[in-house]
Amino acid sequence: MTTQPLHPDTAPPAFLQLAGHPLRWRLLGELARSDRIVLELTELVGEPQNLVSYHLGKLRDGGLVSARRSSADRRDTYYGLELDRIGYLLSAAGGALHPGLRLTPPSRDRTSIGKVKVLFLCTGNSARSQMAEALARVQSGGAIEAYSAGSNPKPLHPNAVRVMRDEYDLDIAGYTSKHLDAFADQRFDRVISLCDRVREVCPPFPGHPETIHWSIANPATGETDDVIYPLFQQTAAEIATRIEFLLATLADRTPSPKKPRSSHDRPQ
Image (cartoon, rainbow, N blue to C red):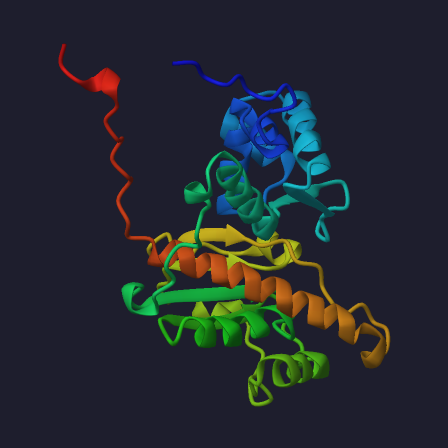
């Protein structure tokens, strides 16, 4: 019996070659938990900054990681995962090997989440965190008990109200901006900052909740509301995507799969 040799052009998908490097895989794992700056990543993976920056550049060139200049310190850059793209590439890599290996999204059964208390923070509590609060409540089917606050509260932005109404059929016109001190004594399961500035001043909360950072640009750039409305649409869409992936994390109660036995495992 003969076997056919692999076609000379057959090669692992570029995604596997890019993500399969041990350090790059560790960096992706850290960024799956929270957006980070280079200094944080060097401490987490225990490697020098020049090496971490080099591999981040590779991941960014491959479209697996995005980079955005920090609004708190313009010398820093926040890196985050391109979640939808990585999900697509993972599925495509499995399908390239065998159709039966194409991945399916994890279950997001809201009933398996249980009640989770989450606080969303940004500077003004006038747009990003308010939209996140509303979207988290609805997308989770009420499983997430969501709140929002800011370090320097400002009135709710009209475009935040408009985009929630027009794009998601949600009415947040009655929401009020709150200072984060109003929640200083409350316990949360997760505290999620959506603004680089508020992350720098975020106080500790009782019970040491998991802290997560989503580095999302402020859509309120100071231009007229009609001009910047597309930025609010983009921001709302990014927050909605991030919350969907958060729900997948909260609903993940599946134990690690057992390693299947092969012919090499059989007793001789």
